[in-house]
Structure formats: C-alpha cells, structure tokens
Length: 347
Image (cartoon, rainbow, N blue to C red; front, side, top):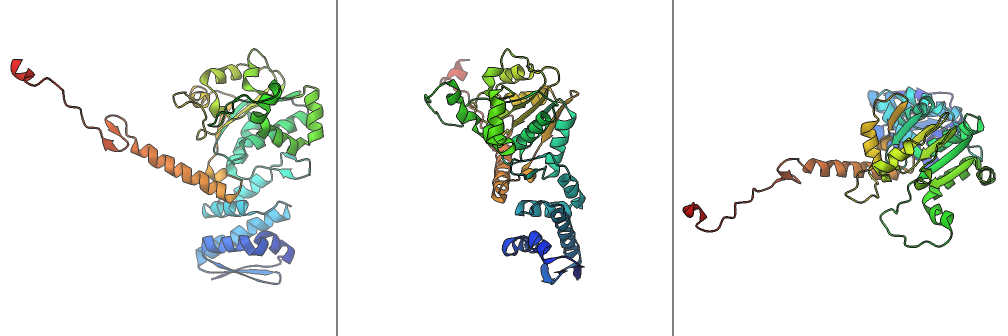
C-alpha cells in the first residue's frame, strides 16, 4: 500500500525528517515502512496499518512545524507512541499551551500529555505535587509558571527552596559564608532562573528580595503570603520538614512540590516526607498530585531508556520480596527448636 502527502515544501520536509533523515529513519524503523520523497510529495510504502500510522505521524509533525515548534527526536518518538494509541491530537493540544519565553525567545511549553496535566493542575490548584523521574520537567515547568505569575503580578515574590542534603557523598566543611555553603545545593534552581529570566533580571529581583533561593531550614517560623513557592527535591525531606513547609503557606500563595521517589538521599531507615504527604493529603480540595512517568521524559532519548530500565529493574526486585515468611522469592526455613539433648525424655 502507498499513502501520499502532497504539497509539502522541501524546507518542511527537512524540518520533519531531521539531519541526515534521522527522524524519517526512526519512523521507518518503528513502523516498518519506507518513506520516499519526490519534490513536494512524500510517499509511505508498506502494509496498510503501518502506512496509515506513518502518514498520521508525518501530518502531526508537519502541523507542529507549521506552528514554529522545533522538531526533535523526543517529540518524534512521543508522536509515534501517541499515534499507536490513536491519541495524536493530544500532541497538538499540548503544543498549543504556551507558558512563557526564555530570555533568548525560546517558547516554553509542555511537551507531553502528562506535562500538560501538570501545568493545568498548577493553574487550577493552590498546592500541586509533581512526582516523577529525572528529565520530566517537574522543576523547570514549575519555574516557568512561577516567573509568569510574577511578571503578571499574580504574586509579589518567588521563593525557591530545597533540602540541603548530600547526594550519597559527604562534602565535608565547605569554605565561605553561609550562603556560599548552601549555593551548591541550590545551583539547579539558579540555572533554570537564569535561562528563563536572564542573569541581570534575576540578580536585580534577588537584591530587592523579590526572588529568594534558600535551603528548607530557612522556612521555619515564617508565613509566606502572596508568593509562588517551589519546594524541589522533596523526596529528601523528612515528614516533619514537609509538615513544617506546608504549614508556612499564607493567603494569595501558590505552592509546587517536586520530587523523584527513586532518588532519595535520606538514610535507609528514614521515611520520606513526600511519601507521607502523598498518603495524608490525597483527596483534599485545592491540593493536586501529578504523577509523571518515563513517557514524559524530555531530555536526551537515552535518559528515557535509562529511566525505563531502572523502573523495570525495581519492579522485578519488588516482585521478589514477598511479605510473610518469604524473602527475596525464597521460602525462609523455620528454625528448629534448639532444646538440650534429652530434654524431651525428661519432660
């Protein structure tokens, strides 16, 4: 069977096919079709079902390119996965949601259906928990929403915080004053703000006290009114710290809590405040939980494969742990009573 798209300019073909036809080759490999171009015509050759899907993928990518969106291997793969589920229209809906622009003019938008739901939850609720693996845009999208709210005078200031805990290594006594000691922990938040606001704007607003980046311990005893507050790396909070943070919220504020349950740096016997909050606060009005998955990873495609591989490994490991008298999939032998020899006869 042959499916045909006509009237596609060569410039648009280059956009949706990628460098050295990387994207076209990915579509061919995934759907087992052959894509042939001739001037302004694209032909898809193969079996009926795969040909129809390939045409829908190309049509969706052409629509994204016409909107000025950058086509990359990530959204090509995501479009392929949506087409398999007959949900490709969701991709166009996601792409239409513009949050803001970076300092260089690059648009910031959700890139997956999961990210779109996350952004909508932030708009509609006072407190939102964004939970998911690395690379799903939890912190970056929250930061973009915070900057947008700040520029639109919806809030008076932005407060960014995270627990200062080492990622599995001891850093010892860091040099410098208190701010210099905590800066390494907060660097990811600075980087995101620089990209969205620009270094000059960030510095000016920080000097005025309108933007605050601080470790979680600094939140104790405060009431935070008319602020957009982001708690990052929440999986590393204790239940007491999480309760302390959530009870700081005042009138006119909005809160986003982000975390990745698979990357805890707490001691092995310590329960995460994020896990407890998920159980305690679920179902309360104006509090929403957005769970992102490996399908929402928007970093390099290899990151998505890494996340998926670890998820599969952890599921297999969890399956081996059976409660009761079984451990790691093997029955635990009952220990024999160790009575002194001849005890039964004496009894």
